[in-house]
Length: 288
Image (cartoon, rainbow, N blue to C red; front, top):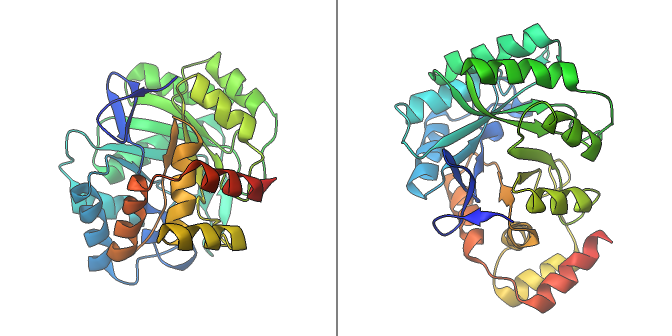
C-alpha cells in the first residue's frame, strides 16, 4: 500500500513526494486550451497561490497552449521550490486551428520531452506521462516502442520517472516490463467508474492514480445525490466530489484545473473534508 509522508502527501519514490491535492494547469491557456490566457496576471497569480497553499504537484504539458502554459509556469515559479514536482505529458501536437493531433513516433516523443525541458527551464523532468488516449477510451494496443523511447531518455538522465495517461490495464503491465511506472492518469470520477479495478491495482502497487476531469470535464458532474450530500455537509458539490476521490484509495491524487484563485482555494479546501461512511455509500451508488 501507499506510504504517506507529511499530511496529504504521497511518497512514490525517495525523490518523489507529491501533495495528493495537485493542480492541473490546462485551464490557464485560452479557450479550447489554445492560445494565451484571457488574464495573464490572474494566471500567474493562480500558480503562485497554488504554491502558497502547499501544492507540490503541478500537472502540465507543452501541448497546452501550445507552449503557453509551460511558459507561464516558468515565469511564475522559476526558480522552482525544491519540493515542487512538475508532471508533464507527451504524445500529442496541436494543429493550427487548435485541434489535438496524436503524435507517438519515438523520435517526436523525444523531441517533445526536450521542448518541455526548454519551455519549463529545466534540465531534467520529474515525471513524464505518455499520453495514449483521452476521453475517447483506452485500448490494449502495444506501447512498447513509444514507452521504450521515453525509457531511453530516463536512462540518459533527462527524465526521473515515467507515467501513463489514458492507459489500459494490459498497457500498464507492458510498460512495467520496460521501466517502472509511478503514475497513471485516466478519466475517473463519481460518474465514470470504468477504471475501478485499475484504481485498486494502483493502490496495491503504490502507483499514483491521477483522475483527469475529476469534476466531470466538459459535462460537469450534476446529480441529486451529490447535491443532497453536499447540502448536509455544508460544502459545495465540487468539494464533495473531490473529497470522494481522495477517500477512494490511498494513492488517488487530484489535479483539478482552474484559472481562478478563489476556485483554487475552494478545491484545496476539499482535501480537509472527511466524508462520513453513509455519505460515501450514497456517492458510491452514483456510478453503478
